[in-house]
Length: 568
Ligand code: DGJ
Image 1 (cartoon, protein in one colour):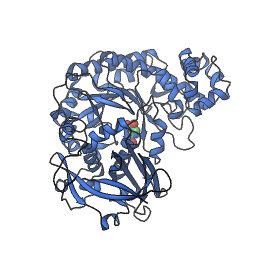
Image 2: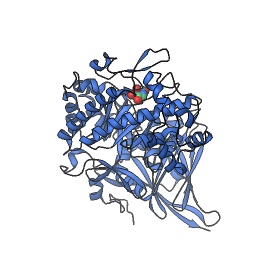
Image 3: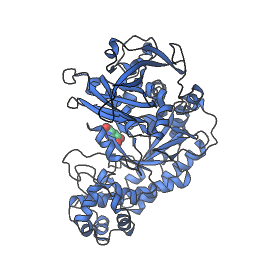
Image 4: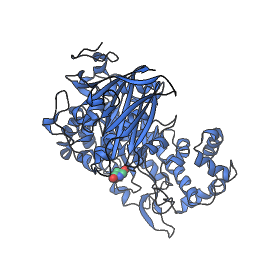
């Protein structure tokens, strides 16, 4: 049994803990002759495998222009490492690597890889190629200035916009050549170390403010038959199609041939589906050219839809929930469709993107206390392969004096992402293990309107109730609360989280016996292992009635081990 001394977790010996999960830093891993980073189906979830081990991305995305300068980035790397990130999402712009056609300059790319390695960080490169937030602001000047050769999305009056048209093979092939050169270079310089673990292809594509490209090429494609690859996908996957999307197809007679408007109807939504197919197939060509050089996992990211927005008010043609099947059919070289979740209903958006063929990765989200809470939810409840707040270089860093750990009695709330990532990085081995067995769950309470939520895991149901009135307490930490549960035995859970909450436990089946709390122990990660803190069976848990999560648990590096028992 547990004694009040330093000890290892029985379920997770220290030796194993050092090898996998957060022992993912480059300084700690053996020189990797192993397979390139890849996705692998592992029982209950699909995981990212790096150097032969499952890897949980505790990431952060840089501001758009930070990574264009190695000098600018120099002081930022150590700060990111001190925030317990293990991965940085860094843009690589087409204009940076191919300033003149056919002449490639990988100086910045090499500088990013070198500095990331020196700081024990991995990289996800964001390919700012043809599109960045619908625009083409990162294409080289030789592309930007030659609109004859590299045609643009046009408005209905025939005017060019500052967006490359996805209907141009010249655009597509020039982008693909540059991306292939980038991936070739990454392979040459990094296929041993695996600093670069994944790549985003383009950024938040789509058309605004119109619902589609109105160029002559686009008009001709709209009137042409829907490609057979798509119509046969519809027939083969009919039962599994996204319900909203299937409803559109079926409402128009489930046709298996015809023009876009014949098959999907004459509406702005058809424009969106049509653009989705054309962005998807273009990006698939670019991604396939890159993968032919070096097959890292690749994903696209989506700007989400606000309520009641119409195609063109949102990015028409982006990888959105209603068009996921079109993207799957059109872009088989893209492994993940990933949501950038800045909207309030975080959990709902996660649920919209998680499908058997689409493990969840969240490349952009809000940071701060809200991001900290969302990270616990995403990694726990939907087994995300990673989480990454945007603008990580502006996130607060922890004060040096308040390192989380045993005996730290200072309450420090200054750097929620850093504290959450400290806890999550120490829990990463267990999280990764439990993602594969399904013995993991979490809840998030979003905004004051949501006072409580329930989740079942094993034989028990946990009710998580907000213990701070978010309206009265305007702090960001009060606005969002989350709790992560890892089942470590039939009657035992590790609990960690963000924000303040009261947690009660009940049997998942109604009636007797009653569930009681046998014990609650706090644990801290100290000196490379989990250390037992206090037993909290008094006022701290209302004499065994409830587990209290405190808003400074992450800052203190505190998690809880809860044991339950039953009585009549
Ligand atoms: C979403 C984009 O994908 C990012 O590159 C950045 O522009 C953010 N929006 C800014 O909030």
